[in-house]
Length: 169
Image 1 (cartoon, helix red, strand yellow):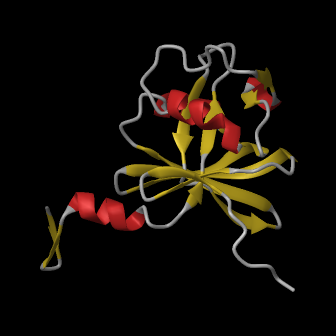
Image 2 (cartoon, rainbow, N blue to C red):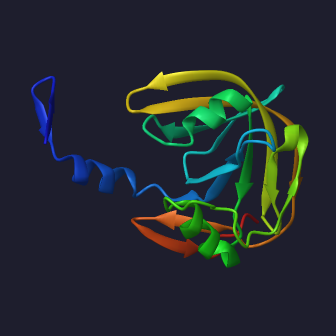
């Protein structure tokens, strides 16, 4: 339970309510040959600006990968396709080598770009801000790639897929 401004709420229930907003699933990667490669599953990705192209994502401030993201000054947003559920799970676990068996190539700044994603955005960090229990990263997109594939979605604690509900006529 948390109490703020005389309002009491259950943290788990708040998380459930926030989880009602469906999102895409990404694996955010960083690192280089001189340090180590890191990657985390994140659904906190969003577009901020088209001119210049800027995106954001956030990472819990206790993440063991935070130091590498900070030192690199770069990150790659890998938007996962429906068939990449296993990658989402792999990068959400505390594994010694999260890249074992992952098909990727080296992109800008020596960062890993995961293959077969719906989209990838190679970014330079332009701002880092601590907000609550997370670190918010803003990045300028320096390179991107996308394919028309079915994206992996997450909502209400479950993986989901796109279903066309309405058509704009």
